[in-house]
Length: 232
Image (cartoon, rainbow, N blue to C red; front, top):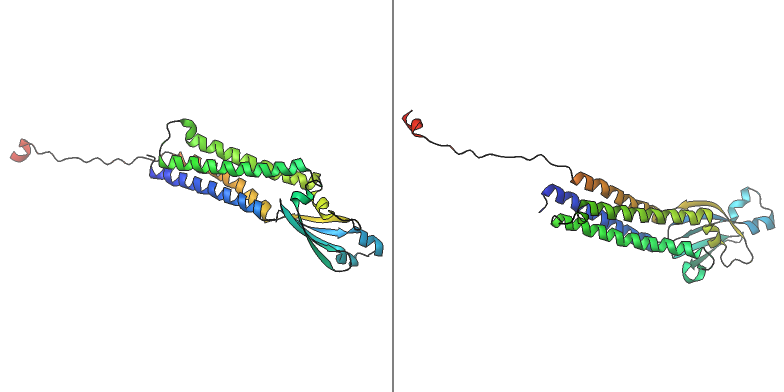
C-alpha cells in the first residue's frame, strides 16, 4: 500500500484528470469558442458610409464547434440568425480540419479518463509493472495534454489560415458581403487551454509524489534490570 503522502498526491492527480475531462465536455457543448465583429461591406459601399456611420453596419458573430449565431447590421437594424455546422455548413468549411479538431477533443477526453484511472490505481495499490506506476501516469498525461494542444492549434489554424469566421459570416448570403473586423477567443477556447494546463500540472504533481520523505524511527528501549543494579 502506498503511504499517505503518495496517496494524497495521486488523489490530486486523479482530480485534475477528472476536471480536465469535464472541461473538455463543457468546451464541446458550449458554442462560445470565438466571437467577432462583422462589417456589412455591401451596405457600406451602397451608401458610401463615413467613418462615423460604420457603426451602423457592424454586427456580431459567435460560434462553437457545432453551432453559432450572428447579428447582421446592414443599415436596417439588427437581424439575428442561427446556424449549425452539421449538416448546414460542413461543405462550406475545411471539413477535414474541422472533423480532426472534434476527433482530437474526443481522444483527449478518453486519455484524460485513462490517466485518472491510472492515478486511482496508484492511490489504491503499488502496481507490479512499472508502466502502470508513476511513469504510466506521466505518459498518459503527456499524451492527453499533447492531443489537447494539437486540437487548440488546429482550431487557431482554421481561424487564421482558413478564414473560418468569414466563411461562417457569409454563409447563405447572396446580397450582402461581410468582412471580419475583429476576432476574440471566448470561454470555450480558454477552457481547452485550462484542460491542457491541468495535464501539465499533473506532471508536477506526480514528480512531487516521488519525493522521499524522511523516515521517523522511534526506538523503544526496554529497561533491563540486572543483579548488579539491585545490589547497588
